[in-house]
Amino acid sequence: MIVLDEVVVRYPGAQRPAVDGASLLVKTGESVALVGPSGSGKTTLLRAINRLVPITSGTILVDGVAVESLQDKALRALRTRLAMIAQHHDLVDRLRVHQNVMAGALGRWSSLHALRYLAFPLRGELDEARNALARVGIAEKLRAPTSALSGGERQRVAIARALVQQPHAILADEPIASLDPELAEQIVALLTTLAKESGIALICSLHQVQFADRYFDQIVRLEGGRLERLKSSVA
Ligand SMILES: Nc1ncnc2c1ncn2[C@@H]1O[C@H](COP(=O)(O)OP(=O)(O)OP(=O)(O)O)[C@@H](O)[C@H]1O
Ligand SMILES: [Mg+2]
Image (tube, rainbow, N blue to C red; front, side, top):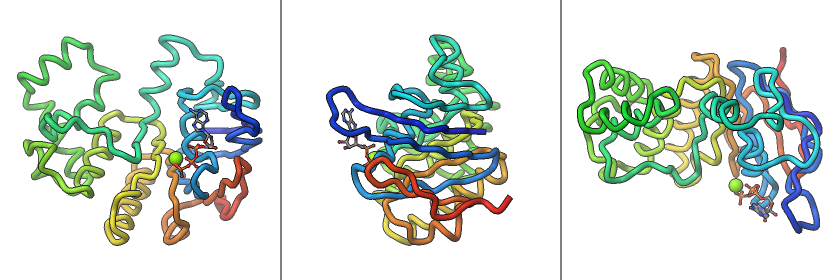
């Protein structure tokens, strides 16, 4: 569960806070669309949740733990529980698809294990990568070079990598920004369905509200850092 209580983020030297008193409650398996114009604070809010950006005041609780209090090992543990999917997918082009997918396991693997995997992946590990790819509908791309994928396929690989991380929550920052409308809807449907099936909380920023209503339990809108509720969960 993720709880935001009156969260304020002010960047050093900025006149106005980028996030200005945002409160939100996201339960396990629940999905939230975060909409709003460019510069409204969407990325800042998502980055504050896994402490990539420090909060100025307020509280963020992830599974009951205040993220602002975490350091070192506890902070790393928090970040393995929160999978990030970025707007410009950060896949490594010169790796094979399964290698990018299994980068999601880095939080539970030692560096030596990760290096060994790159050279000699074991069958069980490849099965795990294949299963994650099957859940996003592209199991046949297991050994493909990442550089040969389409935009939609790359976004699916980024989602598969997030699943391998076995996260409690997925923070997706405009995961559909570079996709055509039909593909965008497919990816949103996939993300929200996977989150529900696996009991993962999902917060997903989007530029447009179109089709958000069909897929998300909650819709909130940021405008100048202020958060407004457009759709609340029924429960
Ligand atoms: N690292 C930073 N340092 C200072 N100011 C920043 C930083 N990152 C963002 N800002 C400012 O904070 C505000 C919110 O930016 P943010 O990137 O969170 O918006 P956004 O809603 O994600 O926009 P977009 O839709 O364009 O991605 C903007 O005014 C931006 O200029
Ligand atoms: Mg942004």
